[in-house]
Length: 238
Image (cartoon, rainbow, N blue to C red; front, side):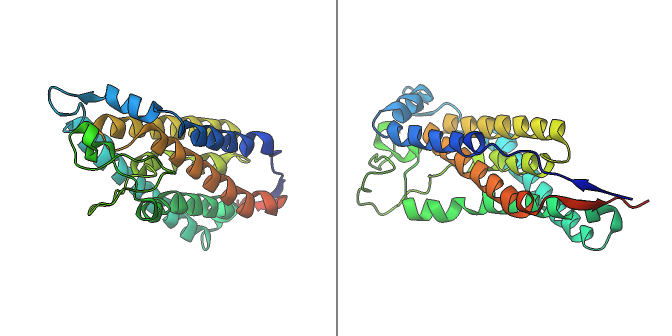
């Protein structure tokens, strides 16, 4: 048996306009001290460190274990996509699985190259918080240093926000599950990003930039692999 799967309408004012508006807000944020003000809330002057600097929950559970969990998810998605090439029961999900694999891969791969290019310092490295490095905003020149920063965009937040790929994978097939996946991705990325802020690893804007990048990667993957190729005939093996 087979049926034709039609794409749900894609409102670019919402799907593309929202992240672009957030990008504009982030650029305007450069004119304020909001990043530094929020980071100060998580710094304990008496202890001379950020309140979550050596937290077992933040470092071991929310950082290491969650990252390992997402790696497992990525490997499972890759394995399922490979199976969809040969296993009839997964034939109808081949494009969706391909979209997920691409979105997960790009959403976690873009961070390190950008860190090396931008060389933004982490809060814990700055003189304001007991470090030795000079603070500079994203669009400002970097002060001379022997230890360039590697903190923009927020890498660990991408561990959560990369799950936007699940939303786009399920968008046409399972709208309710897609909405649930969106909430999970948004909450996971926000919690993981907040945890790293409490440790002094990132400013707020670092994590919001990551959310924008991950959303645009998911949207681009969906548009190229799924949206442009609908309607298509989905085969349901007996």
